[in-house]
Image (tube, rainbow, N blue to C red; front, top):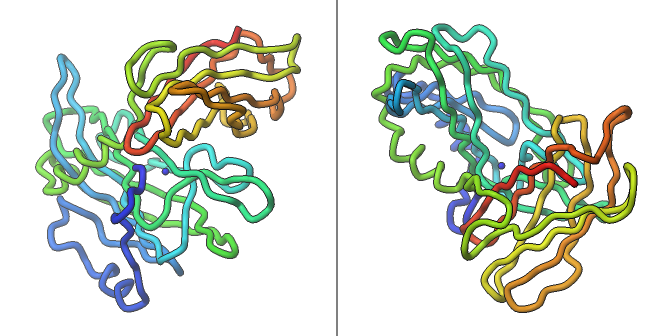
Length: 283
C-alpha cells in the first residue's frame, strides 16, 4: 500500500539483505529486520501523541522489496492477496489502527490490474495503550505476498517496545502525508468525488462515480465493500471532460446474503501526490 513515489525505490540486494538482518542500533527505535527471500520487514517507533483525552503511540511497519517486486494494498485488485497483521500477544495494547498510504495500480499479467506498492512502504500504526503511563510491547505476525513474475508468500514475526520516544518520528510523519484524506462526498477542491449513484435495480446493475481533479492529471479510483468478503471490480474510466472524470463498475463480487442497496462503500481516489477517501451509503 504510502504511496511509493518516484525516486523512493529502495534497492535490496543480496548483500544488503545481510545488512538488514543486523540488530537495530536502538531497540526503542526499530526492531530487527525479518528477512525473507525477496523482502525484509521491521517495526519502527515514533512519539507519544496526545489528542484531547486520548493518548496513542506512533509506530509503523516498514517493508523493503528487491527491485521489480511488489506487495499488495488492503484491497489487492483483480488478483493478489492483502497483507494480514496479527497483534496477538502485544502487551499494554488496547488497540492498533493501521493506516494505508495511497497505492498504485499495476497490470497483473492476466488482463486485469492489481493494487499495491513497489520497492518500499511504511504502514503507519496508531497504538492505543491500556495504561498511557507505561511502555507498550508490540508483537506483530505479518503475512504478505510479494510478486514479480510469480507470487510467493512472505511472513515476519516482529517485536518492539514503544516508549513514546522513538527516533523514527520524522519518517512516520512523512509517511502519514501519503495516507488518503477522509473527506465527505461532494466536498473539497482540487481532487474530489462529486457524486455516486447506482443504475439498475436490486443487487444488479452498475455504480457510476463522478470525480473531479486538475485537468489532464491521471486519476485512479478504487472501491471497497463494508466487509473484506466483498470483492467489487475496479472502476473503469469512461470519459473525461475538463476537470471531470466519469467512472463505472458492474455490481459484482457481492457476498451471498449481502445487499447493495444501503451498503457502506469506501471510495479511494488517487491523483499524483494527492489522495482522498470517501465512505458513503449506496442509494
